[in-house]
Length: 145
Image 1 (cartoon, rainbow, N blue to C red):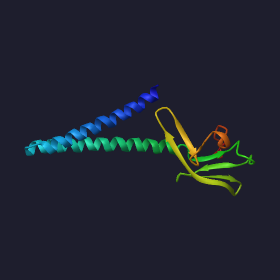
Image 2: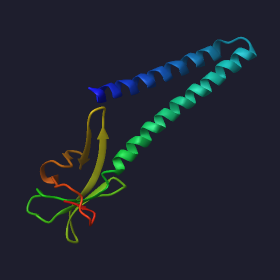
Image 3: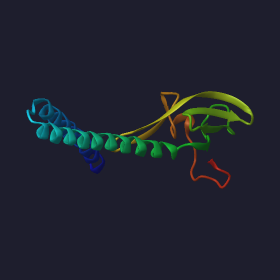
Image 4: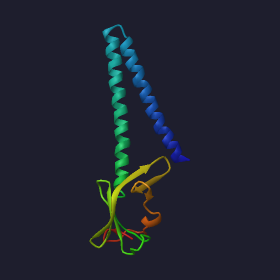
């Protein structure tokens, strides 16, 4: 419930800042005196800066959360490959390797919402489910077993 409230709060912040920016822009267009135009212009710049800053902070938090999943995972359910290892790279590419042989490669992406976070492998599979299952905890060698 708290996480869903967080999503609503984020949407509310965007809506309020967007509305304030729109109203400031309209006020600037309708203002008749140079002082009024300057006032509305300053309000527009401040509100626009807040909007851009908030959007950037959301993007930055998403990037930080995504970076937590970059690494090496020892897969436990990969078909016909009990020793396969999954490498999630920082360029959002992955490889499943058995020794030096690459068995599979493709894109991966991180998705999060108010109350969930998912790492998609090859757009359809999920890290931690099915053939991309792995055991915890992370070992001292950097491989998540």
